[in-house]
Image 1 (tube, helix red, strand yellow):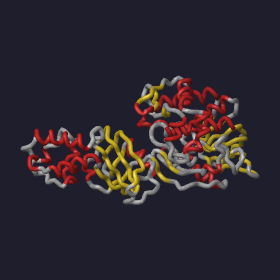
Image 2 (tube, helix red, strand yellow; image 1 turned 30 degrees about the vertical axis):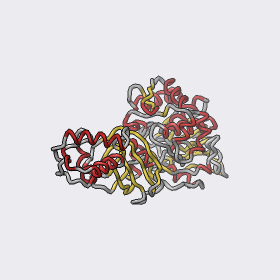
Image 3 (cartoon, helix red, strand yellow; image 1 turned 90 degrees about the vertical axis):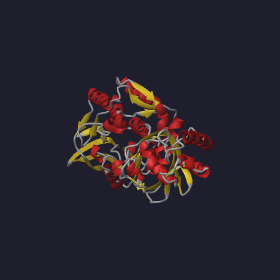
Image 4 (cartoon, one colour; image 1 turned 30 degrees about the horizontal axis):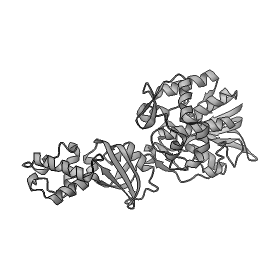
Length: 406
């Protein structure tokens, strides 16, 4: 069977590349073991699909801790505005929310997938329910793919099989093996944008507690490496939520005890302002015990841990708390501590850190420098960004670049 383009993987990158290849008149086929496209797309953004981030290319670059310069050309060719135009041209109205995050107006990721499916069908792109076993290469030139024992031949092959995160969606790491078989280097594979496991038992006591408008800071051996205002969540193992996922992208290792987290529970107040607030609250509750005086200041689930960490016995009458104890408590509320034990498994990560080495991919074309006719797009490449639509934008931008050159 002969095609112009074979695409391995029907995710975000593979589907968009297929649309553009077919629009350029190329006979295109997608090899997707799920038999249908966009399984991971359906669950992104909690089922709402955070497509991109409505910002400049320079801002996009700033949100990639992993190999940002590699993406400069791809973003220049196909940026956030292009992604938005593309999906609106498919009949999906979009909206921009806090943090410049872009979603379908319907808040349904399924609408994005349906629009892509409809377009691929309209263009005659074939989707074959088979898993790629090997990429065929002859004298340094890619000539096709073997999938479930059948040979498919093409002038170009795009490897867009995703990483290792959410393996239930089909991202099983097959792409790394396929690339490695052809001589490509696969960098260390680790989770990114993943919940963090903490040593403190009080996290489990606060399980389900969501904090909004707090500042989370990550320290690497006392050095501040990340700090941001937003939302987070306590879980039975530690912490999760948008702030935590972004913080995890700055962790270079899973080494226990190396990293610590600090939560500013009252970022809108300085320590002096917070102390004045405490003085007012304590005056109103001067005859109550300390543990029962904080309900207007802190969420109920947080109070026992805050009291314990303060060193002030919970039964202490508020009117007997010293100035030093009060000031110390204010400091605690401005830097509530957590000790990082490690990261949750890669299966729970939003994206995979690591992949096909960027040194072996031409950033102008996304073509392999080792095998002619072989292209890469999306998470299989060693690129990873923060949460907020950045990783999907990288998938679309690299896919468009590859499609242009296939």
